[in-house]
Length: 271
Image (tube, rainbow, N blue to C red; front, side, top):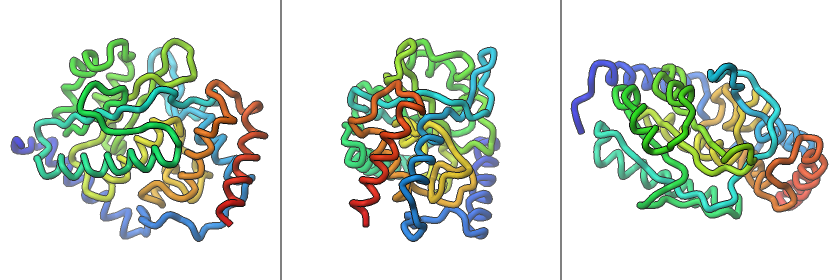
């Protein structure tokens, strides 16, 4: 791996400080939150906030942070994860990242009942692990990798703010509610716990759990950073999302009674 540039080294130092500060405040918990009581009503409400809303709205080609109602979206074709590393990522770190992503893909597949796996060939879900300089130069590669990706999204990835450790964009074809391709970007400078947290969050969001909610708890899909990894609550959200009784394109009004029924069944089998 090449020597880190000053910008990349500064990012590495900044992120290490963020991780230490969060852990010191009792954040980035590594348990699954199982001791926090859940009701079917709360689980259903969290599902609607996380799966039936977008984190961002588009305004004049730009992305604006504002939760917006959205139809249910998920994949129908198998999810083929394709990993791409910047030259800055050392071989031993690549091996750790690859193992982490392969293991988590297996977990997503078991929970959703949907095929999710790492591929060595062409993928439909690209996972890019890039440092500061590599990310800033990403525009030509993204255009080649994902023809038709909106210019505003390329700009958002290229100009990612330091407080955003990672991000994901999932796309359907035309107005379809079925995902056809996705791209996740994870900062190569991330320290271990934040790095694993990003892998969990962006891959799970790319499955269709698109939004963060300040009310979702115990959950990774909450910007308070209380939990570092996918929790038991989040596993249930993913099981609901891929339940055959729900269909891509459903509105909140159509989905709500079915979601509540599935939530009740899932929590009964937990008891």
